[in-house]
Image (cartoon, rainbow, N blue to C red):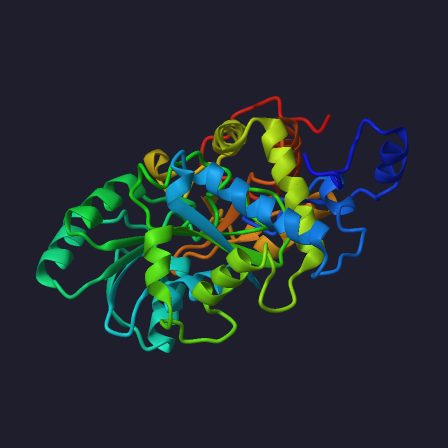
Length: 398
């Protein structure tokens, strides 16, 4: 544990951390999400980007990320990149795919569509396999696309598509991609750290995620975990100066964690604290267990209250769940949202194009007792006639 870790056993630390005010509501979103007070407290110190203490934290973060990603850590490396998760996605795509390359974009939601848009703006030749927002990915079609388009060099898919909460089958997709000897890239923005995985077993060459998702940090940077031998091929590929993943990696490798341009120091320090708290919880597998407990409790409770899920059970992720909006004319999402917010919860509007819906996430510093209280709040917020069978339950707000 680093010397600058917040030590909660210290009496003084407990006192001043407890002075941090409670958030007025819990964020039930796919990120940014609710963080612990200790993660917030980690941002109360200023850092110099040239200082060795700070750069050692960066290096330790990089090391821990790779260890979370695979048991074969000697074959992979990690690169941190300033900006939101989309910045890191664009850095990965724009640096990994050479100008002579061709990208197969597999999409079934808004974030897959964003990847298509990135490829288009960067001038990357691409083929789009769109399964629609409510559709499961057609594995046979992936195989067919790769058979019929031998010039495809890279394949990319979103793991957890938070448009609906769909969890896409990256294990099966990876096998098909590698049968055709292509480079496999995964947008694990809303799954890494919250779903246990091994990138080597999944045959992933590049995985991208963000500080403010399942590791439960705050927004400000993303990161790419890459197979080292693949990243070494990326020199000169980048379509952007600031989003050059290869150059960023080289700087961090050669300068002991130094970023090329100003790094989000407070965010980095908060992320380091969040990593330590992930370890204390038991790692990604233990966090996944908590998330799944939250999600299953949420779905059962919402169904008991008459709500239907957007997706069938076998497509659900432990990250976020879409629910079909009530059809009663007296229902208003804005009114529903504001009522719940007043009671301490923020939910998400729907993102499915042709279906009125809303979404509830269960990642971040969210626990089963929070889900139970939420269900009590929702029960008391229902002012419309539910079309489903309404079942009595014990979701009170105590």
